[in-house]
Image 1 (cartoon, protein in one colour):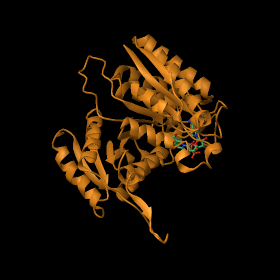
Image 2: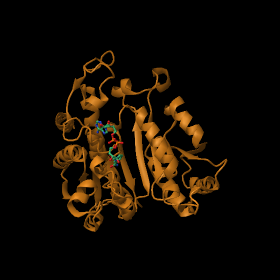
Image 3: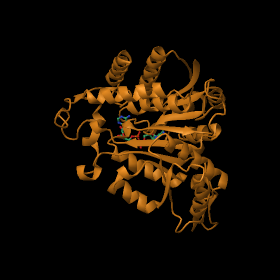
Image 4: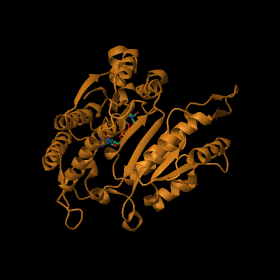
Length: 383
Ligand code: NAD
């Protein structure tokens, strides 16, 4: 099958890491008989330099014509003093809203190989954790009415959610939970906020459609504590734009490095029947930024971008086997001890992490990508 992927490398380390993700996608395509055609598009600072705007209309149009979008990162100090509407980050908000990708899936799992990079104590982490935060992405406080009083002495932002917006992101959460450990926690502040009380009302109705999934509710302040106290208790968390933004950053720190975390932003699932070329539009990106401090220096960890490519295959193209092959190759590469600097054991770059673990070997972006390709080939040879 042939698929088209809009490739938006962006700025800083964006091109460094998306180059590696593309190599991995192509290798998977060769092994499993798919062709991925890339349409390279400008967005962010590089688009400002080339066209004067962060998200040219041609980028949006071309992205909509593709089956999915893979993005690196945007931004950098050279564009920081531009007015708000010309900042590179506008490209992200613009693309998300143009593609109507309202459910942001951010998995945060502690890989056993990276336990030493987790800031929590061993007795807290226990057997590790594997959770997924589903954040509502196109509504709530970030899109509500805001302003200042005439005298400038006060300001306001508005949290407004419609039943439809709540229902569709909850359903995205339930669909994800159905493929995982079948637990879903709705996180809100229903003891104070009216909008949160609406979230609970809608959740109580939607939950009835998913009787085999255990639904629970937690206030956001308690959830923030529980993530530190016992992260292993969570499977899928579904929450609003604001709460999801904060909780997913908290969860990312627990995994050891921002360079490991992938994300998917999804719209409505495709109505195309199974067996046909089923594609669901999605925007896939590592959660890290453009890291200007290490851009072009062969220092960036490409694994978050590579894992984002795996999410793209799973969620947009329904290619589960292929997605798992990438995830297994990343895991095998870590098992073999390969680490970019950001995920090396703290304070002991070449140390052995745990008894029986392979000795750590610090590698750059290019070599990490090459090692994943080798692991992919070794995995394919076994199956
Ligand atoms: P950042 O994520 O770019 O970097 C934070 C720190 O993490 C830096 O020390 C960086 O070197 C390190 N880091 C990030 N990704 C890494 C990787 N893959 N491998 C190794 N180390 C990595 O965040 P920042 O410094 O706050 O922002 C830099 C620029 O990126 C800003 O212009 C910001 O607006 C932009 N930004 C873009 C996105 C996006 O495109 N989605 C997200 C966040 C920030």
